[in-house]
Length: 447
Image (cartoon, rainbow, N blue to C red; front, side, top):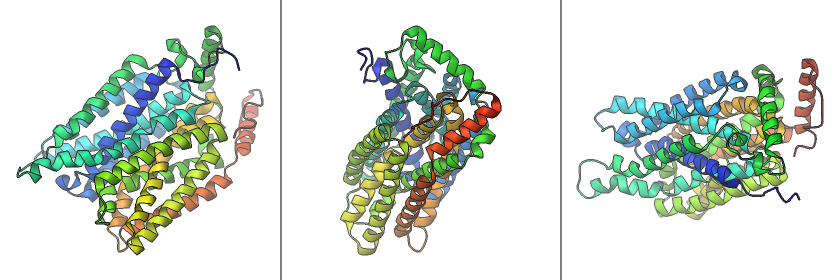
């Protein structure tokens, strides 16, 4: 190995990882906690879930519109900064608005769901793919540990919120309980503004922290990539017409829907087993979720995205089956194992939209493909809380949630077996030939 080639992430790379971790943490906090813990103060879980769904859906539509122009956006960072500051403002309003200003709170919660989805899941993920095209699985695996960590501390948040009421008070401590999370989210956004660039070469760093290139060559490669993005053969129409794109997008969506949907209602699911302590269970879930996020990310990098996604869908099936058995037998231990497995693939749920787009398409086409994969997956994610709330309100209750997870996993398995990296290359060759671009072996052997 070249002595200049580093296996680390570099100082700038670690700063990006920290920014993304804090971004995912903020996303999970201000979309999940109001629904999971605070819904009764704001009209009930079904009403709050509808706001989450509406905000995420509108955000998804904006992403699809942006996908048509993503290759021509001069600076992704500048556009991301706009949505980022709006997300932080809405987050502060969600925490600070009093309970008697319900209409304004609805606007703020809708707004935070819309903007934080675009800022974190869309733009920060694009930047991650541009910084780490070959090591995207490992990087996303580390950053999305934020999901289980956030779920691990939700029990402490709930305890703090209800403490005044349990001590004879008349109002929950919503703002003070949110304050540490607001500070964390704000610090993450400031770090983004101060340290992150669209491409590593713009701040003296290297793609994948690969220092085997001279700065001059690295800069030249960056400029060529930016130019190629403007003339990508993978237009929005071509992407939506591709079979393999839909296999990836739907599986990513099902993973998100199963994981995020269940976790936004984790308090209700765990409460159906009276002997379980919510705070302790969520800490256990956080631990294994962090391990799963990292492990599936490493498997993604080492063995390929398709194999990692196949493993993820198998975990979904096993988690769902164990949950169904637990509900029908009243076995609390089984539901804990089920939720642990769910947490393991929940940590990876946002990895694959980035990983697949980088892994199976060219670097110059990554942004365009990701800009379509991510919003399609987010449509599933948008409906997750509402669908889960409806399932919980059905005759089968909690059991129906785990049946849904099982079915989603089976569908995901089938679609991943259908997906073919070789077919992506064949279609890429056809489009490049039609556009008069040279053919090469850049997509051969993609795992």
